[in-house]
Amino acid sequence: IDLRDLLFMKLLVSNPLRVKHLSILTYVKGRAGKHLYQAEDGAWRMAFVAKEFKNTHGAAEKDYDVPIPQGIWPDIHRYLDEGRPYLANAADCSFFFLPSTQVAKKLDEDDMKLFSNTISNRIRALTRLYLPQCPGFSAHAFRHIVARDYLKRNPGDYPNVAHLLHDKLETVLREYGDTEVEEGLRRHQAHIEEHWTAAEVSAAKKAA
Picture 1 (cartoon, rainbow, N blue to C red):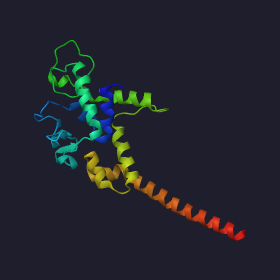
Picture 2: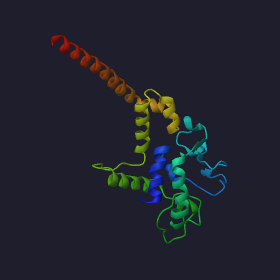
Picture 3: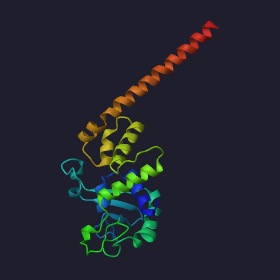
Picture 4: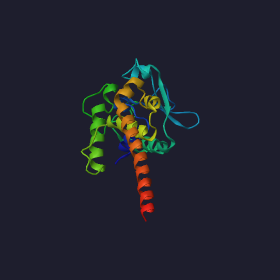
């Protein structure tokens, strides 16, 4: 797995936005209004204005400016130093993720980025390769995986899932409401089994 692939995976898990945002992600040293920037304290952050989101009438009516986990910072530095300079168009545009090869014709800057479907196809190939018995899945699946994992660990906390996905609470409830039912039943059944086991042990002791 190369430096670019590693960052695809880590950013999709830590900041589960739509793959479009990885495609349009820009970086210029010193921020200069770009999406990926390093704050004065050295922390790396990711920022998008509201209009760059699909659901601008929902949670995304607000701008997005959030931290990237500290454990990913070395990967960002290494990609900028050892990976990105050797990708196509590195000297000609500000897009963070770039293709490996450049087409012969002269491109407009917006055509120099790595397109969403290319990233998603790469994620599918990587998950097929590294996850045993997995047919592979697209980048968008990370949003569902992160949301459901969070709800399993924090049952009922739909408002925070909406914040994680930068989406409307109504959308989160519609998409993941079944997780609450399933987890509620699982906890209820575990409680029942615990009491059944205790009752059986007690009955066995009395019979002895």
